[in-house]
Length: 368
Ligand SMILES: *Cc1c(COP(=O)(O)O)cnc(C)c1O
Image 1: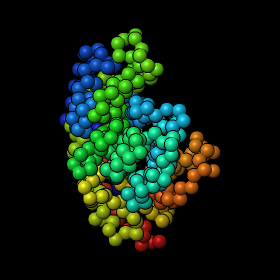
Image 2: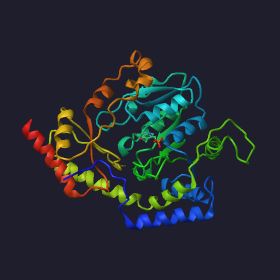
Image 3: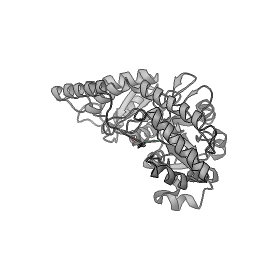
Image 4: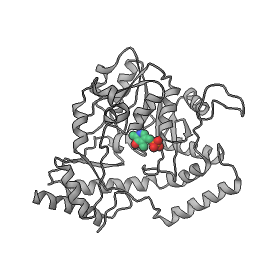
């Protein structure tokens, strides 16, 4: 049996037909940038998240970058970020001329440990970027409370958490902005690059609208120094189709997570936790393993693909290493990066395949 970690080939015939027809409509219209599909997607996605506004942008990185600029982050500022996240979270801060300040995670939830935020706040701190890592909502109420007390903005990094909720309310609706990625592998993925910001703040929405389009509202009149980062009509049309299938995708992922938790309850692996009141959407199912490299090899020989999110934290990457190695001590994050292992999950898999993964793990543990 083969268990691919990921498969983005379209398996639903109805979705494929809907997308083909949506693409045809765009091509018939002949309008490819800043048109009606984008407007409709922005409306539908803002309704989905429960915010007043949504602004489509070119990718998740720009959703973070333009959000940070729109809330006023600039040169010399400090922004609190998780030590353990995909590097895009950090690079977006650096792109504003600001400095990412790493905060250690809670090793049980993998998310930023809000109890460690206040120790890192200085007179230069301008914002916090909590990441809802692996689809698991961060402690957003506590983070909002701390941010309000210190007059800091919050940009929620929702790139892995489409559909995740806290007490029934969607991530990306709790603070200044939510930044979303529609990279193809995400729970809601385009057939190319895409991103969006969600916000309840009219001014922020407007600023991002300017920033994404050369600082321009009226064609050939530029009010501010902007960028070019727009969600194009084809991707917007495709995302409108796929948004209707997101709940089903997330249900499958939750079923898979429950199945793994049941099948692996006797295993030596440490299984991921979800917090009461949080709806986790299982972008990744991440376990901790003491003998990760041998387990990867054992599963690989049996046709089970796994992945590591992430093999190296941002502060150990060549791009950041020199500056951060000397100045920050991050033992929890260092350690997590040696143990985390992502098992295959998602609608491309059957329960038989999950059983096969669990058998492979049990088999490995009996041998070692
Ligand atoms: C994917 C991802 C991003 C960046 O999204 P892109 O669309 O690839 O630019 C940002 N943050 C996190 C946590 C991500 O997983």
